[in-house]
Length: 337
Image (cartoon, rainbow, N blue to C red; front, side, top):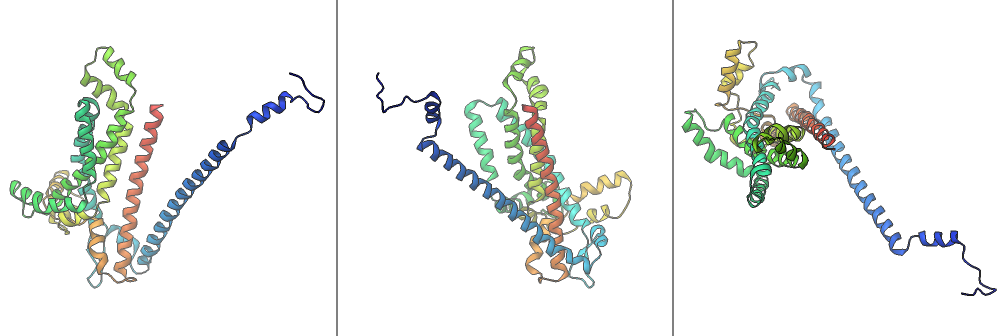
């Protein structure tokens, strides 16, 4: 090839720079990715701002109660009588009811949820696994009011007849119904945690002579323990924050055994008997109290601010539960690397 006098050969440096320059399509992809990244960042910031605004609003409406009612009396009070004169705003019976109902739900939901996850993820055949996983996920989509109707119309009368209880709408019915709501969360997340365990670990255990059940019990479940703990904590958060079920099923009252538990120091046997006896009686949880009474209060009065303060307590509990679940998930992710 001949080069004329007017043409100059292109230097290697210029040719490489021209080859590295992004074309129109590449520049378009870069701009598109920047727009998507900016949109995701904006959505994240907006979510944080909304949560902060809700947080500030709840606190702003809650703490004026302490101008009229002592904070220590609220935290240690054993009676909730907002309509009396003078009114009594005691957190203890509501908090104790919420904790006992949630504890009962977790005692039922954790074994069933983890067992379901182990069967779906480790034992069931492929076709049955897909069917069961879809069924469990569909159970999570059942509206809470439907479960509340089930607990009120079906579960309550059965418990009353079988255990010879005075009333079917009680703490035990609330715990069982909440367990049905927590099982899908625990089972789904636990199954995902079991799925993150490396295949080599299973094959190594089987290669050393362990049976399939020994591998699941001694290798797979311990390796996924952090994820299972996180699933349990999220199930706790789901149960303790539920409103409609406990409003419909638990009776919205304070039973004699629950009152006795708040009476002061007792011997362990009496505490044991009163705790189990409380499950056969009505109870009043934080969420049910807020839902039942918020529509009847006048904004600005002490009762109004007390309900918002219950919301602050509930917010703090769920925040701590979610924080613990997030820490367990991060630990599980670090362990899987």
